[in-house]
Amino acid sequence: MKYKKSKPLASRVADVCIWAIVLLMTLLCILPLLNMVSISFSDRIAAQANQVGLFPVNFNISSYQMLLEDRQFWRSFMISVERVVIGTGLNMVLAVLMAYPLSKHKRDFGARNIYMNLLIFAMLFSGGMIPTFLVVKNLGLLDTIWALILPGAVPIFNVILLMNFFKSIPNSLEEAAIMDGASRFKILLKIYLPISLPALATVGLFSIVGHWNDYFSGVLYMNRAANYPLQTYIQQLNIDVTKITDVSQLKALASISNQTLNAAKIVVSTIPVLLIYPFLQKYFTTGLVIGSVKE
Image (cartoon, rainbow, N blue to C red):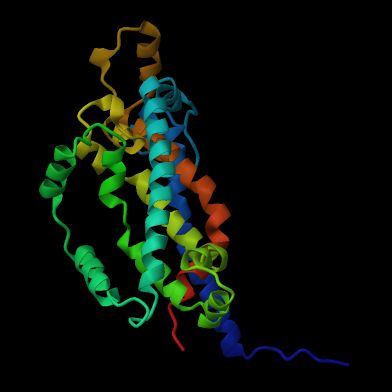
């Protein structure tokens, strides 16, 4: 008969303290989000009087109706989706193609240190907002989707993460593939990429969130509001009664304020990321940790 050894009292107290801290941190993250959702579903008077807690007061969906009935909202939404798809794909391709040779020893890639120093320098010292704007302008990219994508096409931090991950892959796999006649490109596609799914999912999530949440690029590179990505559009969206001539819209505005509208903006812009994150969460921790410890 086996007896289960009980934990020492000190260990059990430590477990309780750890779980209490984790629960407290979870509440600190969730409660503000719940409050924001409640404000977005509350009416103007309750929101302005700070009467909204974790549940809506005088429930209404007028703020969401104003957002979803706006054609420019959907146009900006599709621009952001296009940016995320093209930008993330380009980030991943360039990051992989750069990280793979940089993960090799100097004897295999003689210019490794030169490129690595250039990457570190570019990560620490950027050209600045005005020079970057002039480059984009002179290339004729203003008011195009490429102005939102190309300035950050090579995410250096992601390159370093992938490089460290590739270094953790045993060299014996690559040596065996070379003996079988495989090219470097085939080794990358058939060996490195399938093994590196956790790291790829992690840097992919970084790129998705970065492209989706960026609003300043739209302010900087877009001259027309019709070309704004979603985050730029909702940042400048406010209630302007002077531009509304429909009586039904004026009545609807009686229960909306900029406070409830701003809360609705935050909720709507957060939903796509919240839908994507659960599918990549299982890879997230593994992708960050693997390759960080060297033996």
